[in-house]
Length: 167
Image 1 (cartoon, helix red, strand yellow):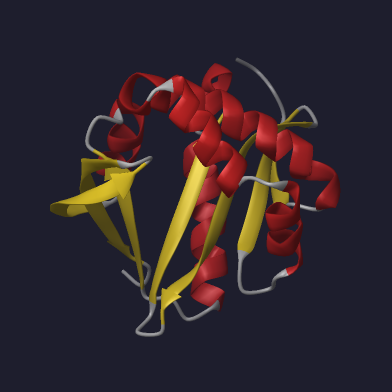
Image 2: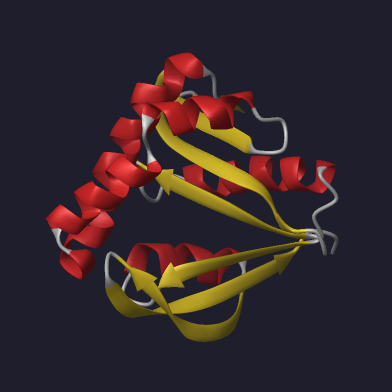
């Protein structure tokens, strides 16, 4: 695919596009794991317009979008989760753009933001059954643990990944 890719901070005009990317990517990844109804519930809880508006306005949370020829095709949110210098970085790319390097570019932008917050290490969890997510994280992070977490009323195994920001 040939397109002009740009990574930039999200603003309020991007909220509906972020919701569309979330809906497409979450259903592509999680419908077979959690079921479409549970996915819709989690999207409603996690991607409400008011919540995203707050995220856009908070300096400590980085919310970035990836645009291809001006259209939002991916996003990343990141922030410090532990005062000991640990942060997280969640990113999703529209399934039509998987494998185009957009996730890597969003990761790079998120790392820069997290470093500005004095985050030393990113720690993220990925459902074991999420093949797309695990493929990405195995490429960019170290697998450090596996545990069980609650998602949509179910106890499911997750892989835990970490990456130092200062090597």
